[in-house]
Length: 193
Length: 68
Ligand code: HEM
Ligand code: SF4
Image (tube, rainbow over all chains, first blue to last red; front, side):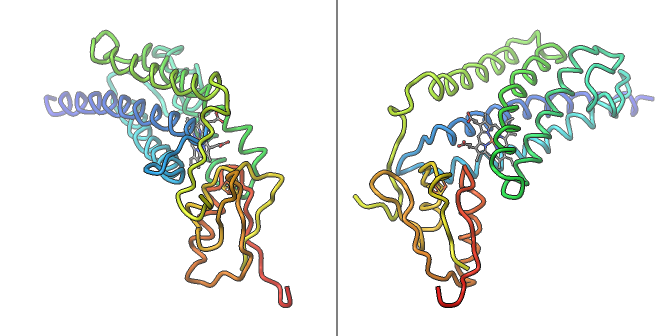
């Protein structure tokens, strides 16, 4: 009995921890994606680093999300089914906030799968699906705010606010500041001076 | 194999020149100048990586035809 109780608790901690790590990774991924699209680069930070990190951090976020979802379902304390993780707004437990999580997860899967098949499916389709990232991220943040057990905590609020601030700054710089001012042109190699 | 750039699609991101300087350099405006000489097996992985990483998929690997 006691063993069952503590292991349930461990699962619950894992759900929360992996959820927070997923949020941080997803935030980093969005900022790196924006940096790639905006072509921010310097001699010390070439573009392929930004792009490579963008890809690999995205893949890593899927791993943590898998842990997040699996532990949430396996933890029997509240009843969450596997289907609740992919079909939005079907769960009996906090249907709205969990539904946002499922929605964000679906959008993320679409973005990642099309990205892995990018060269094959072509730029047009990939690009169109990739815009979903801008919907996915805020929905994931809302899901965390609404469904999280740590949302009353000051440190959790700090992480959320920091994430929003970083993404807002990057998006502002990409879309609002005129393109010519941040179009860097510092070829790392091979360029003529 | 040789590498080709589609100049209409290319956006001048310059990633390709970072990843595959053996065949691609950039002009003064940041657009690629491609050397289309054959790519041997040793260089092929770098060429493939450049094709995959181009943000707009403007690069292509083509079989080098004899006499071209
Ligand atoms: C295997 C995974 C991924 C790959 C290969 C990939 C690749 C790319 C590339 C090449 C760009 C640059 C587009 C351009 O310059 O026009 C980009 C932009 C972007 N990516 Fe990703 N991406 C991946 C996953 C993700 C994920 C999971 C997210 C977040 C949920 C994301 C969010 C973004 C954002 C916000 C942009 C900027 C879009 C813009 O404003 O134009 N990406 N990505
Ligand atoms: S990486 Fe692609 S968009 Fe950038 S310069 Fe090379 S071919 Fe053009």
